Length: 413
Image (cartoon, rainbow, N blue to C red; front, side):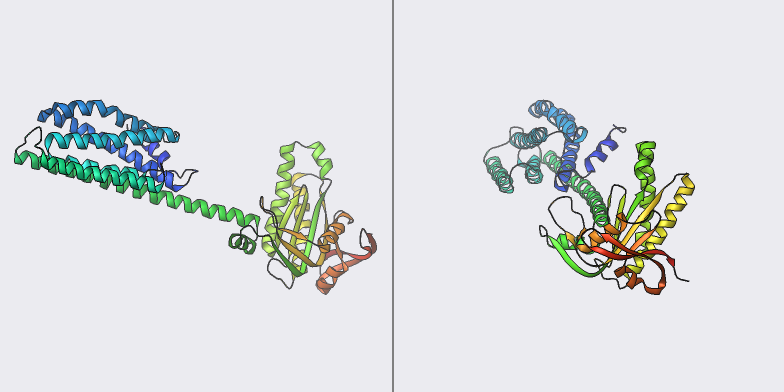
């Protein structure tokens, strides 16, 4: 038993997909099965020694009930509801049968009626039926308990026991039921505490995964206003697009695993830069990376934050190329202005941006120069003298016409 019981108990205490309620029931049922089997094996030789053949034969006949319960609740807790229902019915009916039969044979003073009090406990904790049905069944058992008490007072027991013998039975049965209830309570509370702690850990992990997908303010708004579209206008925002130049040629030459590993190195480095400068990563599309500054919380230096990040992105990619011996370059575009940001839809939430600024920033990248950072006049004005900007002249931008553009070459000084 020592080699399988710890593993079985470990399976029992894990929170199930159905929730902590069913996990608690599994622990409770397993505890009842193990302790019931132990009590059954304890009483059997006692009945034999005291010379009560009816209870000896009854105990032998119902021993498979507890063996089956242990098989279902302890060794195979993942079985379906039908098996759990059979195990529950078996234990409940056996407790009713033994308590009633032993009380009829030995009298109320023997204390075997205490076992009937365990039946409502099993019924109320079980996940079967509605709460009202479980309450009514427990009430019916209670009425049966009163009827047994009344009948035992009207009829003499089959086996007349001496007062000392009755007191011994009463004390033993009370102690046995008390130990069973206390052991179940202890094991149940211990397992429930551990499961609640694990569920809290899972909740925190889910929360962290959500925060890795959405900004904290947006995640909180989604939880407070479930089902609603969340969209906010931000007047001062900068948007950056970055695309890896030569990635298609690289994909033709490298194995998919190698390609993904390189892309992961690049984007992980970009993520670290986004954290360093306090900007919001929006998404990646293939080998393109999109990031914004000034939202969801305002940042007066949103353009400066993205300019610094863009320069560091260039340095990171060059360092990675030197390390790997691969030819890679990036093309970066930057634009500033108002956007609408938020989350729409009901599934696979994603924080996204909409507006002309987004489209123009994408055009800055796609019409840019490999190995260079192209910015619009709006962004250049915000960057001012803190950065080195080289005019590139006017460029025809789809949907915008001619636009003056600049190349960000470095930090001033």
